[in-house]
Length: 513
Image (tube, rainbow, N blue to C red; front, side, top):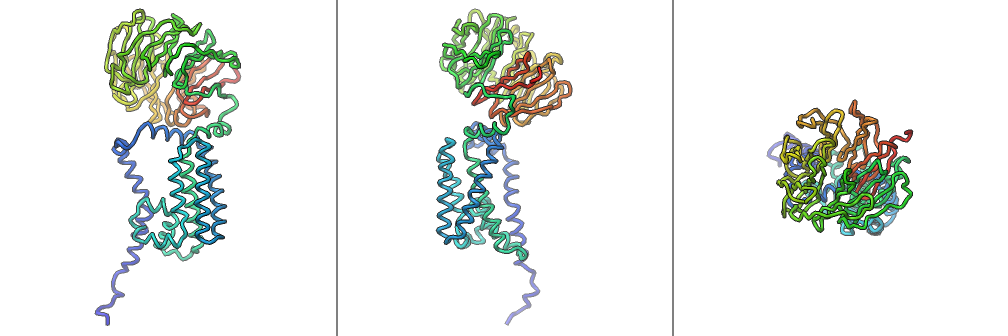
């Protein structure tokens, strides 16, 4: 006999179900918000490799069309297999789905040169998400579903959807429809994992087929960094981590075979043309030598030992007024001096400083260089190569990159890949003059003063934006390929040459010229 009327009690079960439903729906968004809020502290943990993450982001975001097509194809494949598996006995259907996933992963990863260790993730997701419903309900209790934040959503999405439907006490939707939603999400999770993990190198031609215009073409496939264009001799010189020596192209006859220097330049990141001496200056990082190569013969004119320079990709500039050469290393290893000013004639060190700049830009008319910093020291500097001193500096946002001079307005333009902006600064004082909205991941710049156009290349999206310098309005974009690095303009023909980690591109941006 009941001691009291239980019907008078509050409806605990319904309240609990509503609370669990809210928790089940909101926990993943809340978790993502927490990750975003504490992203700085999380990224600073030693388990995260910043360079690896950057490469992964570029590989994903620069190939949206080809990865989208791959995703649709995988969705179609697994959808057909699911329909077939549902007509078989549960374990036979399960074996079909997991076996097909394993085969698809191996074929895809082999053909794209993706490390096979990555195959474990989509195979695991298939093995758990494609389990028969009876096993999912047996081993994943309601309590497990309530506490398995992020795990149940990823590894047992079908059971998760069924759990939410039960909590919501949905009566108008049939169990068959709920099961169909679960299967659709399971197929999506497995397909998405394969699309995200696959390396993008073999997808680039597909992306370019759909997105690169007919006015652009690939001149060579290689890991190329620095470019130097001689508009008088009509020659383009290229160097980079994928080139053992300087390569010369005749820009008036690109069908002509490139000329290759016999001087091993050690995969120099940068290249500078000394117009006065008609020399190409490159840096051999293996021998720590500055190489001065005759631009006419591509033979070695002389070398300067700079063994005291800190290891890392250096930038350098030559100033004819002070007759000096400056080298600035990114100092990947703390084994030397980051900043060296050399006498051009003797190679003597005239000044040295702990300035590990991320990029160097020579002023076109003055014996000055501009220094931006990508990894450390959030600031901008102007160094006078004649006075051998810093003449201007200012704090700046972290991770600034390449620069350009807008001579008519006396403005220094500096790219900020993180904020997708281009800073506008007075070229004498570094006083702020505003900012320009730029493509996501903007890195490299070039200016066509005749047409009053600014070209801004993104190393993340693979696009070059064309911006009017009078209005700072973006008037067009073009897709070339991932990881764009340097842009050189032949304004006489309205042609841009763009280097990247993978190719050298030619793009006619003014076909009517």
